[in-house]
Image (tube, rainbow, N blue to C red; front, side, top):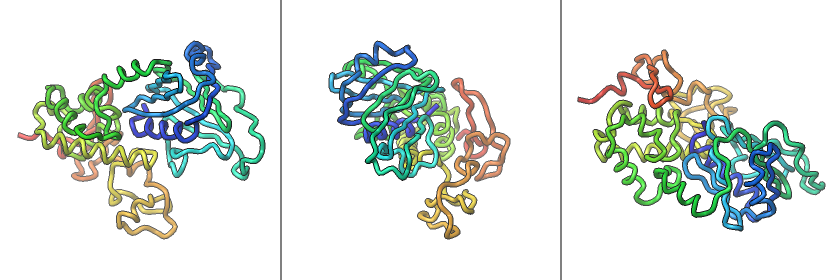
Length: 319
């Protein structure tokens, strides 16, 4: 499931390519025909993300609300001018794909419009220079601004917004429950946008026992956990993928990340891009392998319906 950083990138993409433009909105699949008709021909005025929820605002005070869930994805296409922030320098994107026109096209040729839909396209947004197709989303609905506010009110603070007081609100929500930390981090009412990868990685980075009750975590440690989540998710927006390990754990070859050089780690002159897939996480999907820090075997268990990965030595319960 796309985590909060991917949805934030999607909001940026929509904002860059569609803000201020009247859009043709349709439902090629037919399942969203009523909602699409309410938005067809209206101007998109803003795009925002909160956690895993995307909100596209239109000039008639209606909102397209999308939650991708496990199988949802947006695809974008258009001419060479149809690009946005999330399309620039992205190594890997979850929940979004792009298919642009001829890279040598200077935009002077007439735009022929979007191609015939492929597959079960729930909703299509089309503008002057490109289109966006949504498939497989858990939630796709046209709602009022008041209904969008009600959705937001049910969600916890978003680390990528990191508003004044959010750290305290997160700490209070966490410490008010006796539920294990690993379950609380997946509760979108406690914190919005954290998924299975960030859950496992930030608990390891803070050396926290996944089964520690939230009520047992000191306020200061809860605030440090918030700050670390803010840091790694902000990096995720910039990188287009989740990288939670520092450069010293990356193998240095022709695909090493430019971030390594920026961090002072020597790299070959030709190196650019990102670290190998095996280098980017401490414990996520590394069950049976030695911990990168202590060499203890990483374990796996099911918690809150999802696989949890942790190091039993680095994250052992504190007496």
